Image (cartoon, rainbow, N blue to C red; front, side, top):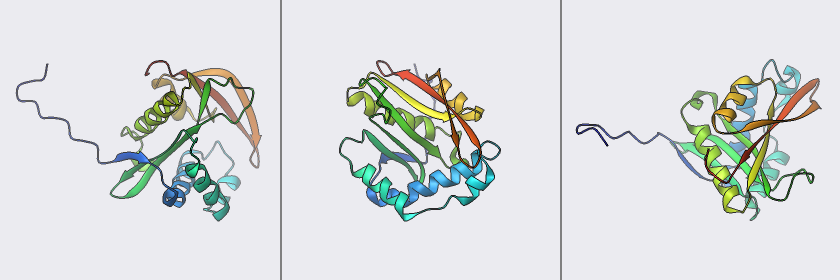
Length: 185
């Protein structure tokens, strides 16, 4: 029961909305800025330093947003600036059961992290997967990025023991997380 003189909580200074093809360059900029700020010491600097907004990648983002079955392409916006983004849809791995969707990306600019933006993006993506009929979801994240792993675990995701190593000018280790979509975390 609310306190008699309680002040209602102010709405966050940002909103979540579906991404549009016009957001593609801003989405790529958020991804690059987040990688460069958060992945130093995990991903080789030579790889991070070479990241730049490229038209071919922006075009792939546009095509992904434009796909009717994408399942979720969302952005977080503050004062008309894209401050976060996320993608989800059918898994790329054909070994994953058909009832499992995948969250491909959740990135929030460093200045906006810790303010609920990532949680709101993740919830919007999992709700979208649930609406498409998926019963569970997976995602991949950097094994050694502890803050990101704590974030997913706090939101009901569990590391399922599957790992991969990629060569991005040096080894980069990924771990897979999974969650049930049958109920909200």
